[in-house]
Length: 216
Image (cartoon, rainbow, N blue to C red; front, side, top):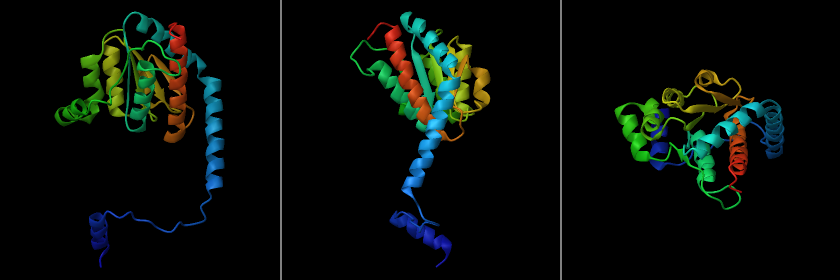
């Protein structure tokens, strides 16, 4: 049986292709390695990124008070992070309070697929920003590399419309840096470690914001 035929059988059966590990796999070693890296990244971020975080909060407070909103967007895990943070603004973080106006751009499957089909996947955020955004809003793009084309185009559109642009990214920030008024760098290149810090930043942002707005 040829290798191609074997692959065809796998596709038909939908059975997972398990293999023997190449060496001994230690859960403890993986645990300790991840713990060490996570804590190192967290320490570096907390040591270097407060000014950018504070600028994000200080931009958001007057924006929300004057009736604007916070728009967040990203791909894959970053899309989930954007939804997570937005939910905690519009619903609550810990205590019941009035909602904070916030919107995630990865929720409307019809709009996303229509735009991807008609204009290309790289336009899925810029089109929605043009539709739903207003001058004075806060547009927050999440990209671990800082180079996701659709996130860059979303930020570019937001900047042209008079929004404050914020980037949550990784160590270098990629092309995102030039498009953002505020950039928060997580000092690492592993997407998993970066996204862990993005959620931490999001929780802190919501917690401080609701206090500064006098909602809790």
